[in-house]
Length: 339
Image (cartoon, rainbow, N blue to C red; front, side):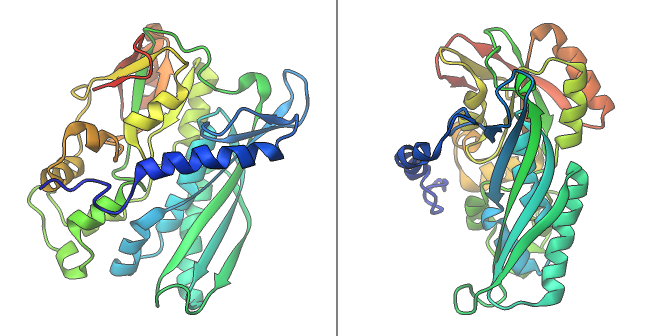
């Protein structure tokens, strides 16, 4: 029997409904400085009404159930990188440079050495993103979290000129989609990963033939931070839209940058699929579409560019040290994601 995300305990449809219901309350707080609506990768707040006025772009996120593997493997020095990545990667999708980051750590018992390890990861992530860790909150909550467990969330603010915001509005049919490789599972789909690989330390440290290594070597690989790469790239090329491939995979995230009336086609054979995703699909027994609606499938960012510059963009990304591929195109099929 196939094991999918819903059977692992995550109901994405309930998530959609929650966003729809909360929007009416969120909108009551808006003023003339708020640009856009829920659905962008970052929230916009303009600091002036001129075309070239600065605009703040903010994002907040957590690490999800990937944390369980930090607990099981007793490894806490990389999970903070994930917390930073999930926020700053969203912000840079809009063309904004992250300026600052704050973290929130809640745990059952404050163990100074463990908190220091977590914050070490946060600081590593901030250096990778070029932003300052300016504060945070550490909350000791006995009886609320299980012993030795904790949660971490982050919040980041970036800045971009209003006339430099990347919002997908100029995307047209025939534009190319360029994918930048992920470092692995990143921080989404772990409710399913945990169901497939389990949470037993001994089993996680056993060699897996399909993976070519132990699961433990892969499940805590930090999320790649793309900030410096993207900021460098947009100085040289017109990037029309950028999608951070997080929860919902290609199916939900790429359409967020595509104008109404258009769709996308992604060629799954255009890049090498990492072994971890082959193994997860083999164990779960689920189809390609469900995989692409749960995991990043080896692509962490998707950029929409004019097809005439796609090869040059890929070349530049490779020069910046990234693995990149032309993975698809924008189509005239309204709202459809073809694989």
